[in-house]
Length: 538
Ligand SMILES: [Zn+2]
Image 1 (cartoon, rainbow, N blue to C red):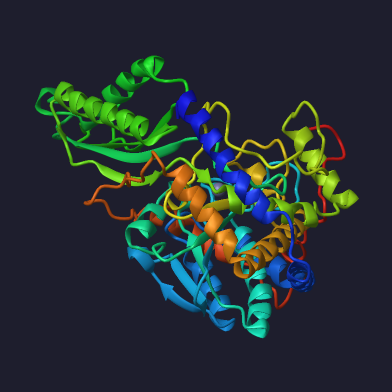
Image 2: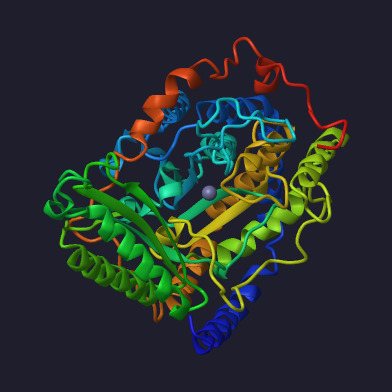
């Protein structure tokens, strides 16, 4: 977004906000007292489901499944939702490990989502404040995606009980952010029409604080593309002139990209891995593939990066004398933009709930890990909410992505962040898994579920809120920017990804699946003392 556009956005947001604030402020006596009482009831109900939420967090942690292979996680969640009266559509949008669960009827339709997949090579013993994999090389929840569904489902069950009794109209949907680490599915959910009748999307993601924001969020959107080349084999020593190396094309493309990198915008991020680099050195590689993420702050710049990549792949194939196969899009994400009215409502509820009470043990684990990672200040867990509701990013210098961006450009959306992780970690790393099956994660989830339950009650009790959300969405957010999917008509979900890795590790991982019928929590099952911290310097 240009500075002009940003200023225009802020001004128009203020214009929209002014009349809304008047509408919001004076609570009708009686009207809001009832809502407040229902909220209090929901908060108490969430609190009473602490064990239910803890089991869900620990169970999904123990499954540790990579994107598109979340079969155990999916089955587990579907069973819970069915037992609780939800109708579940399984395998939606051609993705075996995705579902859309529905309960209730009529308006508003509120869709609660959260990611479920984990990170390669992030296997880690929970509550141990140094790198100690449960299984060397195996995947693990090094982003905390084992916790978000517990936030949503715990909140939804508390609110569902109230909606049934009070006969409040409304439909609750619960859906999976399948393969988020591959930004692999949400654009397909949109394309398949799963958000067409949704009024509001409430997304949850693990964080270091209880937080929400509106407007353009810092970070990038992206397209994820695989380039595959085909040459000809030959004896690499006897007749190398008879061969054409597909790996040469991959290397030439990577060299070209790394030279071009100097002349790209500062906000871009691009990275690649070679997924096929040939078979063995004495056989000229007939096939080779390289997989790129092209990240930028807006749709036109993502497209521009992608075209540059396509040109380089073509040029590299010409240099190497090999063929470039039709490219495959393996994932995509729009930059994220969150709704003002929904964020304000959520923020008001965050202030009422506040941060969890951390125990000495919680802080001890956090500080020990921060020290282990050589953080200059080992400050422990957050004990203060942010100063105020965060608005649009001032200058977007780029960063990570989440395909919730695609949802956020189709329906008013916010992401609630809840404090189940330790501040100052690298992300996509074993360190981010350490707190995720401990009291830190469990308390953070309960705090998040309380906020989510209160926001749900706001949305089903105050139809004007949904109107305000759509007014912002139509008159401000999408006034000039229209959603166009990055996925092309010929693209389909990359559901084959990660299969080989999970096939390799799953048999060993199965031995560590959490059994709540025998153990109070996962730490008890693993026989890990809470917290396990170094007594001497590393
Ligand atoms: Zn994530």
